[in-house]
Each structure stands twice: as structure tokens, then as C-alpha cells.
Image 1 (cartoon, rainbow, N blue to C red):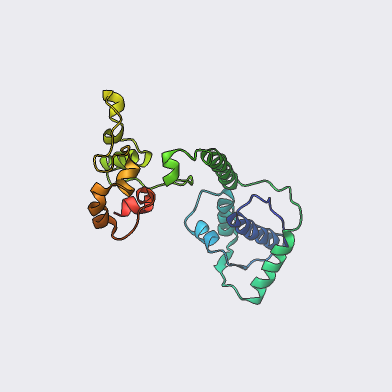
Image 2: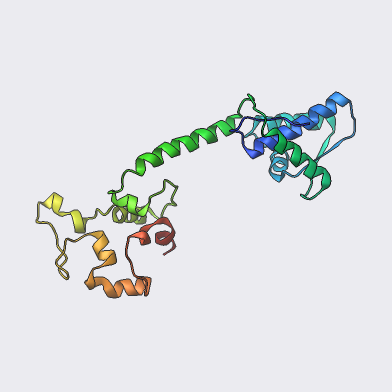
Length: 221
């Protein structure tokens, strides 16, 4: 017995539907004492903790409780389990008009929205933040709001030291040690005045970019 789901369905949804199909077969055959074995630990956990994130899991739970049927975990490598996997793979080539579960649809929409967002962000190559964060991913927050504000200003390259002249109408600031335009990138990567500080903070590492301000480095340090 096999059935094809919509191509946008998740593996978790497929495992839940597989158990539901087994239940339908049990009810149609009129069996009274049945053990259903599955290699999907996530499906079993959803049933054991009364997960309400998938309606099918709740329907299964009611059916199982009313019929006295037990669902158990089985490891890979068992002949019967391997045969079930082959039947599932064979069904993949069959076209299906089955509906998509709500949770899978939300996941699909989220991936599509992130994809559109990423395509727009990929065109912002001159953006200072893009050089540090080229991928649209969720970064952790800093330990305090003060640290988060400082990190944000450094990442976009705007702070009072480098851009305060815009408010005070002073001349463009220059590095007193090197005579070039003062910027966050220059201070972190090239300024001779802060070479000792860079050595103490980053050792012999040669800083060619501001990747030290990304999520992995800045929060760990």
C-alpha cells in the first residue's frame, strides 16, 4: 500500500500520513489487536506530547486511543521496513493532487518570501552591512541593548567618530596616523595607530574585512 503526497509536503507529514493509512487498513480489515511500526521518531514524539501543530497528528491520536492500537519505533535495516521504503520511493514518481498541510504551506511561503528577500539583498553589494551579512539569516541578539546598538553602528559603518561631522558640519574626518578618510573599516583593518590593539584582540590574524563583526565572532568575543 502506498500513496503519493503533494511535492511540497514535508517528510514529517509523509510519516504521519503513512501511519494514518495503516490505521485505515486496520479498520477496513477489522483487526482488533495491531502493532504499527514506524522509523519516524518525530512522528511518535508528536503523538506522545499531544502536539497540536499538525491536525493529522491529533486525528491519529484519537483513532489510536479509541481502537487500542499501539505504534512503536523500529530501526532501519529490518527487511519489512526496507520493503516499505521501496514502496514509498516507487510512489514518488506518481503525480498527486493531494492537498498540502497547513504547516507545510506556511514553511513553503516562508522559504519563498526569504528567497525574494535574498534576491533583493544580493543587489545591495555596495551596502556596508552586506559585506558582513551577505545571507538573510537570523542573528542572535547581543547581551544588552547597549552592546546591540554599538554592534549595529559598527556593522553599518556609522558612528559619531566617523559620521559626526554630518551633524556638526565639520570637515570630513581623517586618520591622524595615516592621513586617509576615517572609517570603521580603516580602524579595524589598516590603521597603524591601532595595530597593537588589533594584535591583542585578534593575534597574528590579518584582518582584510569586517567579518569580525559578524554574528559568530562579535558575540563570542
